Image (cartoon, rainbow, N blue to C red):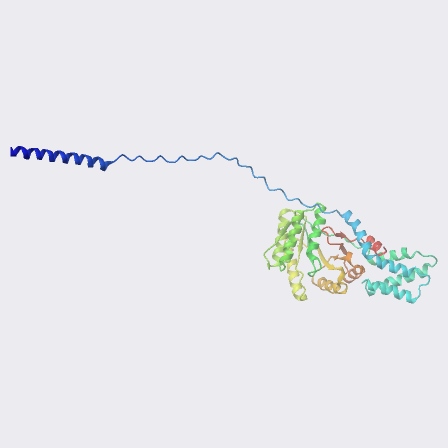
Length: 367
């Protein structure tokens, strides 16, 4: 009986242990973990790419032609220079031309910057003609003829802007800073563009960054290439590259703006001489234009003498003539340098530069 009891207890213990192990096993495993599906990928609808419009071509200005410039030359000069002629005519129209009257005529001419020698010459011619011809004389006609002779109607005022042997014409522009030199270079380029000439500009006034930028702006407005270098670059090297480009691209004319410093004649001579020599390794210089401010009077003539001693000046550009009643500077500077005034500045506008016309100028003096 005791043995059976032990056997029953043992079976019961084994059964309980089996049940406990089974339950623990099931709890340890737990339910199977299922991986969450990846979130759906958002697919963007294709966007339409708008075509990029090409940048618009810059609208180039069309400069004014020579004919209309000459019309405005007469108008502008008549407004600013008429006082001289009216004063002379009033004196010459007196019933009696005594010594006091002739002295007043001389003073009027000298005040207008005609110069001493040209004034004496003009007065002598007027006295002779009015005395010899006698009778009723048209003072205006006589004065016009004598003034025209004084200004020089037969001088060759053509710009030498064409080269030979396939080379471009090379124009060297000189003058002190403040005379309007760089602006004049830009305005000359407009005259040539209006004549359908291909032009290259050389910004060789490298010591003034403002001059280089100013010239670049002039070129952009009419589609003219401007050769430039870093500030302080050797001016001769910029001039050389400008002419080199002109030759390579088949340009008709290269215009070179030069430095206008006037500290001393020796330094100026060295610099301008070097620029000219370097340029002429590729093409001859066909024109050297000296830019003078018409309002500076005698000071302008001193500058003119210095430059004429340094380089072979072939023509003069008088700026600000419209704002000066001293138109006699035309006569004096031509006499002083022995070269003609070829261009005159008439105002601040981009096309306010015109070929000088002796007849138009004298008519303007006479109002």
